[in-house]
Length: 193
Ligand code: ADP
Image (tube, rainbow, N blue to C red; front, side):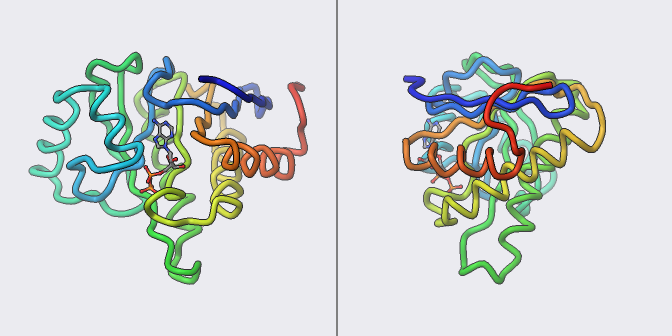
């Protein structure tokens, strides 16, 4: 169901934007917009657990037993179960409370911590959904800028194992917001060195 796509190169890594279903991606890891309980839920979280099977929830339960609930802005990694992706990186984005409760910093942290976990585990490719813009109510025009700034900053800061980041958005309005932000922040329309 890949309808639209855009791509830029940042520090020799590829940043792609596509419209599609994150559970179908074949990147080494996919990111889950989880909640702090790591017990699954609606939206993309439910879709990932349904497609990946019970092994993911089993590991989530072990993580929570060991270290408690996952704080907003942090990330942990589990198996990908039956998914094409080998791993799922679970992160918790902020609930939107109007923008003065640290939401931009917490959302940037969710992207940064997920990418750092991928790099620490030597992964080459990772897909993200549009974290916080569903049930958590973060306005998509603002969230798209935070997301792309965070990924851009991470890829620029140093060379890591991460060679490809895919932003997988579900609907065409979200795609439009992200593609505007991509152009605004990277200054690139298409591929370039
Ligand atoms: P949050 O609680 O962080 O807001 P949601 O899952 O409610 O997370 O929504 C985040 C975004 O993920 C929304 O834009 C939603 O449309 C989208 N989404 C839902 N299912 C999928 C899927 N299978 N693949 C990619 N994106 C999805």
